[in-house]
Length: 331
Image (cartoon, rainbow, N blue to C red):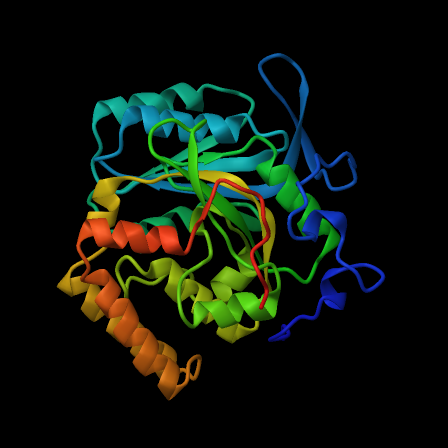
């Protein structure tokens, strides 16, 4: 059984965190070849690094073809290529999206596996459908309109190899509107397991599209659930924490997230407020939060979901920082 809490010594050498895990330190480009589990020839007959990670992406009819193109390109351009990229079409999609996938499917440097669902089933069910065909020991998540920095998977895999007790490895996320080179804010998360779990009692601070998750830890909690629409990832983190999974967050943005005004409008309203209360009740029933945390957290999050989009946007900015590399506090 995995430990519920992990000390710094468990995640380090000589009772100190490695440089790559120290808050505020830029992630170096790993140079060791010891973590490479295979090789693959690309179209230029060069040997590409291959790691046992399946990248899982879900998309749907409303996605912009250019955004999907940018997302896939960021995976195909990784300095260490994954075992495969699994793309789930959540329901019927226009031919323009399929054309983007077809183009990457002909790229011999990385297998692209497409899963087409006959109808839209929602994020949780779509990801579970993709998980059924993933072959990797680890699952890397990304959304179809986000961009992974070129060294993301190599940096994450290097840290996982040096710290085998980690089950869920995330990073910060940098947010942008339309131009990926013009970053607006950074969503941060503390690095230590204990603090990550403590923060989860109040808000979902983990960047879902940035995570790499141990496959057996994911399967041990039943994968994703559709019980709490729009809160599927928060629900997953709580169940993983309850199961004893170990979390860690890289103190550096390895993912660029596209932030849309329509997204913030969608993530609100009376229905989401009820879902949030239901989710908080689940957290209370499984002893993840106390009575005080249920009352305070449930009320505050429900009020937040009912705010107008403009005020909600202001609230988002309060829990994010300008584009800087200062560390998130662990206190």
